Image (tube, rainbow, N blue to C red; front, top):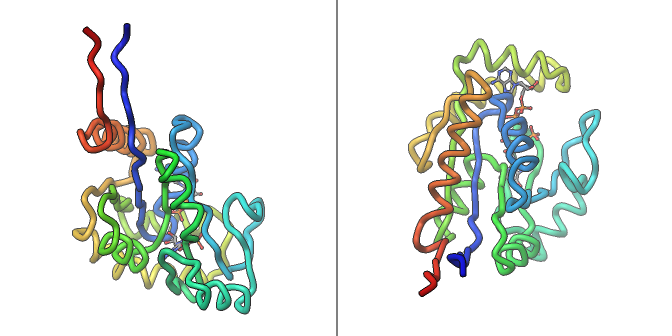
Length: 202
Ligand code: ADP
Ligand code: 5GP
């Protein structure tokens, strides 16, 4: 008879300035680790080329967003870089109840809000190796206008100033190294006794 492991779901919060590589790291993680479910946020921002409604975001109008706010449908919500974003409460609760790990890619305002209200979570802040490289990545991604890039660069310092509110930080310089650090944090957090209970056979 083998050792039995009973696992409790983990709420993983990932934040970092726009262009730092959160989406890239999250995509790699989701491909490699089937225990994670991505929390698909609601946003009023325009879809980028290649973004799929219901996969990357639920794209809604401002009216639809305001209705969801009024209905208390959001676990947290915030206005980021001039657009509205929110995490739907119900899917998170359902996934957590099923013992799944849930990943939130949310801004610092929303993340701090969740951290102040959730009993248990893992929070990670992704830092860029430099502001010059952050700009290069935003420009290289080719999805945002110069005005949008300027706004996101202007917000980056304020977001980075909140890094100490998070349990972990990772510098995403070399992607493979950053990804390995992310994996190590997750693997250690999965083994916490409150998330993993073993039954040892006779
Ligand atoms: P975010 O989700 O944080 O806004 P993205 O994941 O979209 O950022 O990454 C922004 C751009 O930077 C993308 O073009 C991505 O391919 C690139 N990128 C991500 N990580 C690295 C890295 N470690 N080195 C170089 N480029 C990277
Ligand atoms: P983007 O427009 O580049 O996809 O995301 C911009 C910012 O909004 C990122 O910092 C991202 O983490 C954040 N964001 C995405 N979804 C949510 C959400 O549901 N809530 C909050 N508070 N921020 C979000």
